[in-house]
Length: 95
Ligand SMILES: NC(=O)c1ccc[n+]([C@@H]2O[C@H](COP(=O)([O-])OP(=O)(O)OC[C@H]3O[C@@H](n4cnc5c(N)ncnc54)[C@H](O)[C@@H]3O)[C@@H](O)[C@H]2O)c1
Image (cartoon, rainbow, N blue to C red):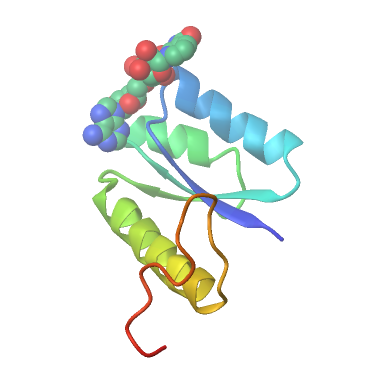
């Protein structure tokens, strides 16, 4: 499985994370680099074929939260519970 990743902040650490993920983590795909400094975002994204850039990370965060909520709903439907969580927690009544 490939995990699609958006990196927010393309300074020293962000650019290094982009490089590490792209070169050394086969299961990771950097798909977007967001930085308010568009030149930094562009420079970091240019090292990854196909990676997009953004100057505002809010859309990326909103998209990720939507995905996480959908995954959590599927988890609950499948009856997968986290340690300490009551079975069926969060499921709508009658499901
Ligand atoms: N550099 C290091 O060795 C190091 C080591 C450990 C931890 N850190 C921590 O990592 C963090 C980043 O450090 P850095 O050295 O990469 O800093 P940096 O200044 O090189 O990079 C930060 C980047 O974030 C961008 N940015 C700021 N606000 C943003 C926003 N709202 N949306 C998108 N992009 C935004 C800036 O434009 C900049 O390019 C800091 O909290 C730092 O303390 C740094």
